[in-house]
Image (tube, rainbow, N blue to C red):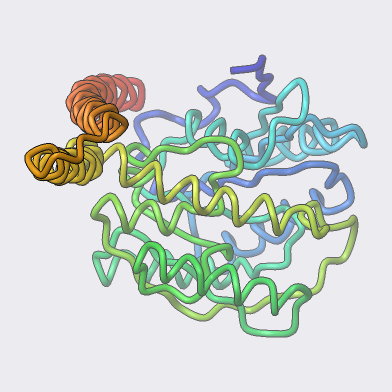
Length: 325
């Protein structure tokens, strides 16, 4: 992980006080939106008498002075914490950095452009406590760009993962165990809902308002991102299949090759008995059986790797819990 800098020490928020919600706010060149963000949450906290939330802004290598502006509000509000990356690493890394420094029972992901309403975030926290689900995803209500592309992407995600949520990339609130359990690689923040569902967590949804961006420009536009998004979507699905049941996946493929090898061998024997020996068939039999055995071996190795991965996750989660005590 790249060097991170904090605006205030962790001791500013007493560790003896339980934090209900950690709001992670990835920010890249959002200097003009940071003051609005701080004031919006200050108003929300005063309105609902909230004293057990924290807002964690992660400056992802901004070049417009976002970190310096955020530091001013970190000095003013004890619940406002700021960290930064030395260079731009992407939204997923910003979320992971915020999560590493978080202490909340629940984790909220809130965009720095304020296109989502903090009041909706408050409602989502109330709902997750009442419903006992593991993750609540908001679905956008209102006009927004890229609606057609968003619908296609969300449809593909529902079909590939079977997740009962209509919008994968809006504001969301989850139990911290979700981020402890699911794998997140570069740009995989878009699949948090799908990964949570795949890893056995319960999910639900609720409507949230979408507001127009006041300052700055969207960081997620361009036709190239559509191609990357679809490619990543397929990669995530293959990853979940291969890591959760490697022996079943590779073993099934291996069985097909072995079956073809046996069938080809029978045909070769029949042809030989009838006096029509065909040596290339023998080579094909050897090839098919060899490939089948290789796939079975890959399945066994995959099971070993998956077991090691599970053990590492257990150690990581134990370390994370110990750090938050």
